[in-house]
Amino acid sequence: MIPSMDIYDLLVWFDQYLAKRHLQFEAVAIGGAALNLLGVVSRLTMDCDILYPEIPRDIAEAARAFAAEVRDRGDTLQEDWLNNGPASLANQLLPQWQERLQALFSGNAIRLRSLGRVDLLCAKLFALCDRGIDLGDCIALAPTTD
Image (cartoon, rainbow, N blue to C red; front, side, top):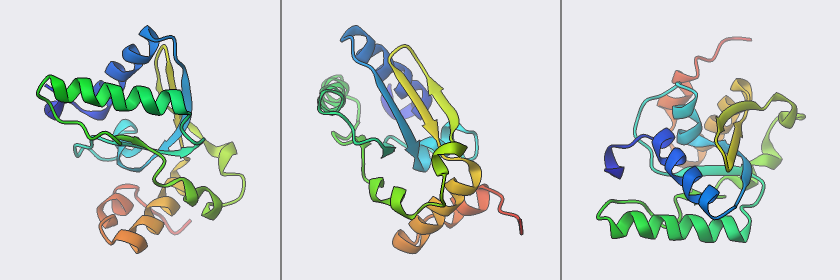
């Protein structure tokens, strides 16, 4: 059942969904999904924030249809579970953040990377200032004086 699934299981299921439709998606994910997949936090999250690139229309439509199928089965998944909500953050990150990306998830149709640790911490600090609820994630990233 979806509510008890972690983000990894959700992505595996969505990867299969995309593969059956001959769709491919490569992106940079951040937020709770990335932190979960990296093993930094273990809280349940049911969305995947995409920093870059803008989610193509065919992938966005597939994500909405996937969410509808999940809901039709009686489970819960928001229509916008795959989103570009934090995309504007890319302009605020440290220079050359793209060079510090790390592998996050690799399936048959989906390949996700995430920011490096320092860049993830910067993103979470921005989120903390914006929303005020990300202190736990900042601490979980184990910042040092370096």
